[in-house]
Length: 477
Ligand SMILES: Cc1cc2nc3c(=O)[nH]c(=O)nc-3n(C[C@H](O)[C@H](O)[C@H](O)COP(=O)(O)OP(=O)(O)OC[C@H]3O[C@@H](n4cnc5c(N)ncnc54)[C@H](O)[C@@H]3O)c2cc1C
Image (tube, rainbow, N blue to C red):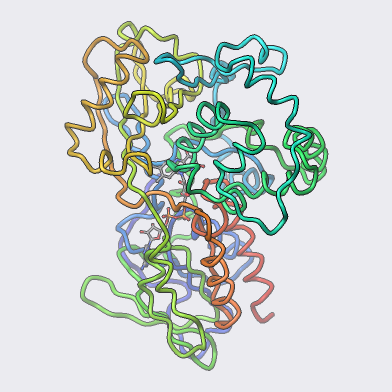
């Protein structure tokens, strides 16, 4: 399924006399599309403005020579009924794929080798991944005093205090490279991992909270990120954003970048540009769902709204994704898992690798495998920006050592996101306060997306759903 990016008149075409329920969605990534979809299903006229010539934002899938490569994200964690509902209502249940049960192993690299993470508490005591000291350290975790509620700590300080150095270096550091491409000495535990902060405050222990919190999650119908099923589609994640755009039809305007909003008596005038042509349209409400550095570029006039200029400071490190195909016979490792993560203390340059063809079917031709590696992030930002040929050599060199890859790749696909993932660092609260302040002082303007509600795809889908509810409740009946 593909969408026609040609700008066409929207069913909420500019009508200065009747903007009473029309909503402008700025940004056609998963957040903006999810919100537009839910509003449109409730009969609210929407227009999606997307600067690029396609929707999807960082979600993009490409099929070539029997391989399927994802440009950015690879899977959605099905943590909430809102994600299940979106896939169902977009008519995609038949195309949804859950990751293979054989791909449950997760590998962490220690001593230059990938070692499987123990799957059960019983197996945990036998693993070579952690020393006896680190294992025993878990037993005293419930007795470590909680931090004062108003104290903002880095993730590193939090983990050192509760679990010690080995857990930081060999569990948390690689996990953060895998999720944020980030650095635990900079990320804020309160903003980057709000659940950890809440669990410590509520139960005084992460281990106790793990058990007691599960009951509450079940009551809400939610699943923890560790237990959630990983979802993709037969032709990759882009199937989802294409389906949402197809439902919205002419309400999606590609190649149309919004650069300003002006307050009017009835709502907001959206000023956008398609090529050299400037166009304005009137709307009752506006959702801003673009990256933070793009929000900072927007001119918002006529309200006592604060300037969003400071959002430019939010740190988005570059990340490159290197997708390689190999003959199965030329990779020694069994690839019997989700992938491997690499701690910064190990002498490698990639951040980690997904065993993509073990996770989902249709990722590689018969007798071949696909490996997706990430380079750069906060750990080594300059590496992500190296020329494609160098990225490829860096990745292949690490894969030879770690997975016993022998032959030359049969498939290559490299892409760099110069500003990939926002880092919720210590002090991120001042940006969230600014966003709250904007919504208060510019009634009818809403903000949602990876810069506010959590960085994962699941978070973005939930944010798109929730902001649609907020907008629908705010619109005049
Ligand atoms: C390399 C990489 C790998 C990732 N892997 C995973 C993963 O495996 N699992 C996971 O859960 N998450 C992953 N993520 C995170 C997740 O993909 C993102 O957080 C999520 O897709 C963000 O969606 P969004 O709609 O908020 O923003 P975006 O996808 O950034 O969409 C914003 C849209 O706004 C448009 N835009 C910008 N300026 C304007 C303007 N002025 N006017 C109109 N439109 C504009 C952009 O063109 C873009 O389409 C990954 C991210 C990256 C970069």
